[in-house]
Amino acid sequence: MKVKIKVWRQKNRNSNGSFVTYDSPDLNPNMSFLEMLDVVNEGLAVKGDEPIAFDHDCREGICGTCSLVIDGKPHGPHKGVATCQTYMRSFKEGDLITVEPFRATPFPLVKDLVVDRKSFDRIQQAGGFISVRTGSAPDANAVPVPKENADLAMDAAQCIGCGACVAACKNASAMLFVSAKVSHLGLLPQGQPERHRRVKAMVDQMDAEGFGGCTVTGSCEAVCPKEISLDFIARMNRDYAMSLLKGDPKGIAGGGA
Ligand code: FES
Image (cartoon, rainbow, N blue to C red; front, side, top):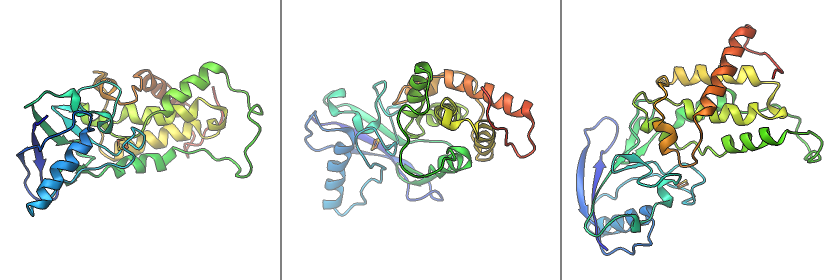
């Protein structure tokens, strides 16, 4: 099969960008979307043109680095998959496919389709951790965890921090990402000591990074490759309100249900 791709090209964040259309070479429909970009890039390199810059690492839906808006939708046409898990058989012969970077002010563009998502790292650093004594792993049954909480924590922990939620949101809100990170720790006994400090620190950092507020349109949930639920935002809001009520001046309010 052959397709045309209309790709956002931009040398760096200070230059102007524009769309450039390329004809793909013959493609195997079972190629992934990123493999299609690889073969287009091989053609560009052979001609001496600058290859298209795009992010990727695991190519297995794990790392969250592949960050493309395909035909207007972060991660492309399918629900619950990342760009690297999108295959060319999802498109038709001769299709014109538009490919853009994740666009949001807190994700400044680096080059072409690559954006800088270090703002997510800084939010994680603000509170996305637990303080436990290091050493050998404790017995699996030493700390009982209710089944419902364990399941919910695992659901939240699936977030791969790709930023599709931000790219899809008209407000560039990072609430789905932050709520997943807050919840997967806050639901487990090991995450209780910093529970309220964590939510306050992460939400404050999210605001400092310039992410917008949530108006519950649900576009984040619709494009999330791990189908993280909006319910986690409600859970985070409750925890945040509790952290304010506790009113610890350092934001350190341990324990709590
Ligand atoms: S490249 Fe790792 S999730 Fe897509």
